[in-house]
Length: 545
Ligand code: VG1
Ligand code: CO
Image 1 (cartoon, rainbow, N blue to C red):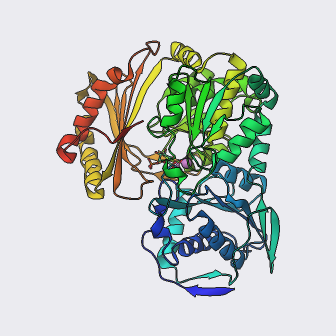
Image 2: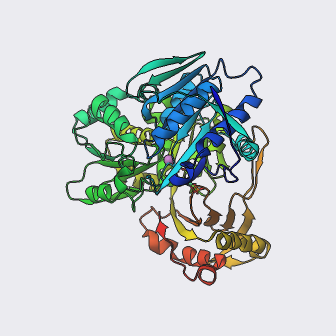
Image 3: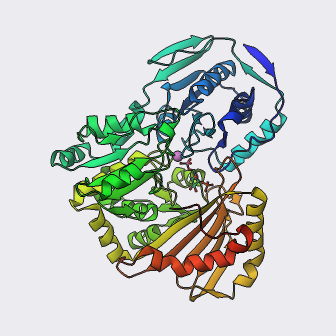
């Protein structure tokens, strides 16, 4: 065991989902080590008896630097005295699989190496997030303490020993620690077998149901090959881009209409399969497509909540409640109302759902950013959403588009878009938000896009389970006709700033309106309120999802 002297880095403050930086930043000497030691120092404050009886889970999405960082963490975990470290074979674990392992093995927590939907490679992005005992992302109270530790770190401990061979399962013993290499698929698959009716899903594929799943050259490839093709009998070739690559083959592993063009083209072709789906770099996001039909994340969340009890055995007892992040469309609110269960509105980022789930208040939750999940783990879960949709297909025998249209007929439709303005100067983006914030009181009496503003505020969230408050979570402008404009800055980027503008208009019109036309007045109003042209010299976003 060796103790290494180090000096702090000033920028190790976790954002929406862990610490995310350019890969080369993480490759600086001591950078990973400092952050990991800051995590251990934080966690140890709450564990007077130390780490000897504790288990740590380690794995990542296979991107560039994943393997190097994993070896560093294994050496440090052993040197810090962890009794057991569970590491995914070849360093692999998707984010929801890591959550499943932490929960099923009673681990203290886990380190997940990923920058999620951000591109990978030496000139792209890398990240580390710490998950706690419930399997979910560390809450803000802990990430703040990690940051404080990172600012005063003086040394870390590690082992003077060569790399572990992580290619096959097995156990290494070092003094009082053991490093156990686990099958990254096993715990996750076991969770799915408890939740879903594999028999009926197998029968669905046996009836000739066809799907295409795009793993985007990222971590879900092996999981999808195993679960969809091997266990459920989907045809060989169902999974495309199914081998995890360190740079995702140059793809941007963000499953949306812009970044999954191969899948979209396939689903719009004359011989399109029944269902199309894709997941992001670390396997927690999902895109759901029907033939020539895009299911928005807000609608997907609402539909899964609507059908879970009748279509999926794991939810047969009903839902305790649902939750969505504040900018996410209100479609799920109406389902909750019909089901007479509570609907919680949280800030952006999965870490806020965990407390609600631990307290038994919420079963299914989601975000507009292509994330859906439930209390089976404490992360959003891309393949879970895919199996939910397969379950809906198996139970209803209707095409995706028809299921969604029936939902719109019954509940009305939230026409919804997110407009991202990427690559802004941080100062400019901050000024935009501050200017908007200072306008809030005057906005209260105004009318925009043909409706009066009912309320304009800066979203602040009080966690009902522990009373913690998270302020400044995005500016909301709520109109009397139910439309909403939301504006906030991204907390996952690695250079400059990204401004996100979310627009939603609710209509009980059967859902057949053209989305651009329906949203045009609101988009126009949003751009004017935020004053985009004056501040950016442009008002067209970089990407619309
Ligand atoms: C984005 C999304 C948010 C999501 C987060 C992590 O955060 O908006 O909904 O939870 O990414 O997703 P931000 O702060 O950039 O808006 V993942 O799949 O990248 O971990
Ligand atoms: Co992700």
